[in-house]
Amino acid sequence: MVTPLPGARLTLILLLSLNLLNFMDRYVLAAVEPEIRTELLLSQDPEDKSAKFKTGLLSTAFFVTYSIIAPVFGWLAERNSRWKLIGIGVIVWSLASGASGLPWSLGISNSYLLQFGITEAFFLLFLTRCFVGVGEGAYGPIAPTVISDLYPERIRGRVLAWFYMAIPVGSALGFALGGQVKTLAPVNILGRLTEGWRLAFYMVVIPGIILGLLCFFMRDPERGRADAATIRSGRRLTRRDYLALLRIPSYTLDTLGMAAMTFATGGLAYWMPEYLKSEKAESFGSIEPITIFGGLTVITGLTATLAGGIAGDKLRSRIPGSYFLVSGITMILGFIFFIMVLWTPFPTAWYFVFITLFCIFFNTGPTNTILANVTHPAVRASGFAFNIFFIHAFGDIISPPIIGYIADKTNLKVGFFVISLMMLVSGIVWLCGTRFLQWDTEAAPARLDLS
Image (cartoon, rainbow, N blue to C red; front, side, top):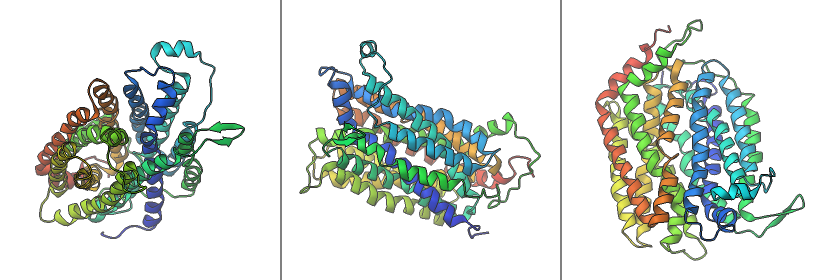
């Protein structure tokens, strides 16, 4: 079978739209980080030497809850309607994102919180980012499994590339949205003057709720229908079935490589607006540096994400480990060009930014296709969920505050260099997985006795 199943295209469009909003929300936070730091921290203590570290923790708050809740929803997805779980998750994170911009209060004593160097407003923002993570934890591990059940293995790489294309486009739109909205003068909302940066969080609420409600009208595809595997409904999955994922070389190496990449790119993306400011990256006319970066992200994300998925699919008949091979080579090249970004003055550095972004996004489709192809459909949602937990727990949960800490002590350039070394580690780990991929893919349909 090489053609998609009925309903596949509508499903892809809806999930792609949701993923777009997902990443817009994540990177709106990065775009308005300087305003948050100034208003919620430095306004109370202008000499706060750990302010960047603290705002880095806002990203950590999201990814901690996202990583912890994802395995729970992965387990639920193998026993319940996946579309209902996705709908619930999307509505939760849409509301939580809107709450991130609210100037509200719980009546907590600022004098108590100031002992820890934070204000009540910062603490409440921290809490809302935790709830955004809860909502996205319901969506992240489930969406790619629905796509995998509708598209066969032969074309799955390029289809998942379309889905994950929302990462660069959504991220860039988040940067652009935050960058533009935060410059607006305060507006009156419900009798209260609201700063421009807060408005950025409100923009995804209504579209998110509408798309979340649409999920309740979608039908779940039969699990494993696009694969060679069949699933008997009476067979109960055991802990042993889930632990078997860790014995799949391609799965473990792919996850390790993705964790190293996420550690590097998550931290770099979060601090990129501040880095461009500190390096005095030139504007082009009225176009601000962060908008230029967002534009480059969209262009490279669209082209590289699709190219990576197509390249992995096209090469798989000639090179069994093609998905690992293209990911490993381009990530190593991405590390080399990123070092050139750090030591090249702007505007010349923009050329190396473009190439670095292209190399980073090239692996998105192939690495997620590996996860889908080497896991049995019965445990695929849990496979994606554990992958989410691991790559964020050892990736961008810890890298933004680490960069912030290094920057507080030295500067962002030093922090970027230290963190970027994990891009090189990622590429090497993926190359090591090349020799295992064909066998693991062929063994996946029969790996569990569920037929």
